[in-house]
Length: 432
Image (spheres, rainbow, N blue to C red):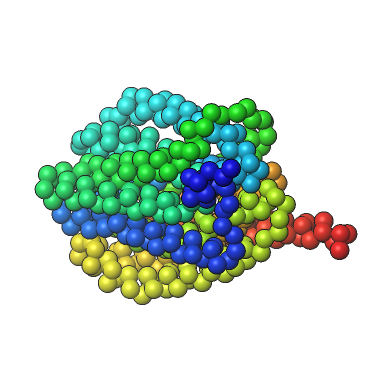
């Protein structure tokens, strides 16, 4: 008998067809944009906080952004989608339990290290109070749990509640930050308190909606086979996340507080482009995993790539044109000149990154054959960090290195995607 709850959550019969794909993508895009806008609205508060506090907030937030949350989410999305396709939900329950235990233990070790070097960190980042750092530690724990539950929702193709979890996270972040800054006069730490509550709301909602899977009694699974699938996903998406978020935390160490404030403002606006296009790949990924598990063909990747590039190009052009007006609306007057000059470079760097994300999702949907591409992506990310450490004389130079690295990522992912397609056509030729 079919479990009604399973049917509602999309675990038994995930929707198929291009119509349902674009409905799901549209909803997730709306949730991503609105949730992102709620999170972005926190940055309006920069007008009410002392100089340097906004840069401290940006640096603390970058720590959270730099966590390997994307690999965790995609690993759980892949494992969940595959388990549903092969009717092995109890096996994926064991994977969920293992991921939860490992991430929690890693956080405990990391928290002890951070607290041990607390004074050094505060001095390096020009911060007077440890409150923001302590709050960030709790956020880090929740931020390691959140992608686990989001990954299960994504693998179930339960995009309705994935979207609501995103919205809840954005609303909680904004509400508490406004209260802390405008009423309590607590600045960077208060804004991070908003991030804490928002993340807690997102975790709670996603955990409740996925309870059917993680509450199951786990059955034994072949750990070696699972690791062969997990390692490429973890390496590939870790490399992508470094390219996506690593610049902010590095810039904090190299430039003055005012310059970091300008850079964070430009980065916040530019990354909004990916709020618009990432849902397309997020909806595509579990469908590709499902098709691969059942040895079915799918022509979805090409359509998603074209839509992503088109939306990203339009968004980048609009941001380059309207950037000065947006910066003037959101930030302090002194931000306008510098942040507006950075916006075209930053927005342009996001376009190849968005396209590369689609190709990377396509490659890693079949993780057994994607170890070499994943290692190459991670190697490129490491080279990017090294290049930034050598070339950062100006903020624009940082963005130029970022843009070239993202173009290189697109080239690497494009070549491996072309090669994989050629090999599939070659293997199918005798059958025809």
